[in-house]
Length: 479
Ligand SMILES: Cc1cc2nc3c(=O)[nH]c(=O)nc-3n(C[C@H](O)[C@H](O)[C@H](O)COP(=O)(O)OP(=O)(O)OC[C@H]3O[C@@H](n4cnc5c(N)ncnc54)[C@H](O)[C@@H]3O)c2cc1C
Image 1: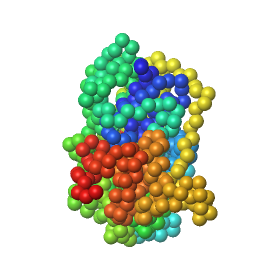
Image 2: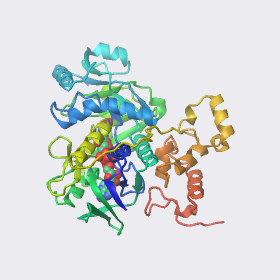
Image 3: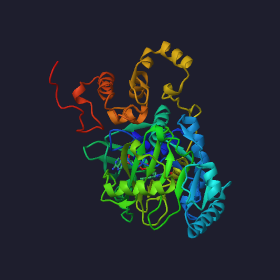
Image 4: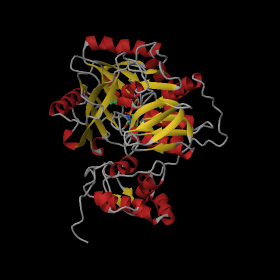
């Protein structure tokens, strides 16, 4: 089989590109090195739909951000991914920072962002009573929002697969060679696929993938961001996403509700050796607490339920790079898709497909494309009557597996059955939130393992945390 397009990398960018290409009569294959989708930057970020005041006017980032906001809200609705248009505030704490707020306001206007306003510290406290009394002014950004980045990625891949895209996991691309028609893409363990066009959406490894076709001029600088996630009890400490203007102390430590009702604080910014780094440092977490408390002094850090690290794929130009290969016709690279890449994902996907078209790919729409994907992760939010009706249809929805997040067996089985199927514990967690609550899987873990084993028809000993050798248990000690 020769695919029309091979996409390398199933983060949010590859996922949205797959969904975009699934609208057309094309054979599309999505390759991912991990055991699941959304395992790179798209799994661990702030989940903010950025309001577009930050990128330098005239850059691709600014264009994608301005175009991307509404496109993302629209896609989230179609895919039934929970989001909130909660707005954001960028805080100033001094006269100098008041000027920066004004500069961001002007920049936003140049970028074509409507509705921005500069408000006083008192006005900011009137809409967010828990803000510090030291706030002197703020930029109010009404179009900003919050969304769960991995739920979005899973939904986009699932929708693309429902429309015919093939997903190949555990396919770590190691070589790309010219074939009679297009290119043969091979993995480290000897798998190979051939396609006429290639989209390089490999995130932190996009420079390495580009070098496989001779484009060795790109460099990714991995920069880690550490976070503290707090219990839902803290989720209403603020309703807007609270940023600070960049300062010498660092930039970008936010305090924000998440789309799932928790409170998120972070991220730090530090260069790390590899895009796969998961390192958490005591200095980083101390910085997160200190700077978050500067904005919202009453955040109760005793309610922290977990910490995590996400790694940015920063480039060397400060802008997104989306361009055809200089050496290999038909190959388009997407490099340095750092923040606000999540916000821009639909706009970037469309732009990337346009680049493929310029390379000669012809697009013929499918008459039966369906852009909608049902959300089955809504059981917790249903009324008692709705729950009753649901349980009558499928009794598995009446058995609660994750007590913290109130996730039922029905939802977990569904996550293992539908596109893209969850195959490991983290996959179930990302799709259903089981194990994401206060106990972090301590109670529901064995139950989830049993469900995975049953659904996949494997022994419990083969259930993994995230593929490969990450088995949950080593051997059976009793019957
Ligand atoms: C700390 C942090 C905070 C952020 N906050 C925000 C925010 O609030 N709002 C926002 O808009 N953006 C934010 N971003 C940016 C956003 O997360 C990224 O722009 C986006 O996730 C990039 O998606 P991607 O698909 O390009 O990369 P990734 O999600 O990293 O996906 C790349 C995929 O390629 C796979 N891959 C790599 N090499 C290979 C190979 N050789 N073969 C096969 N597969 C391969 C990887 O396993 C991975 O799954 C943040 C980023 C970070 C790190």
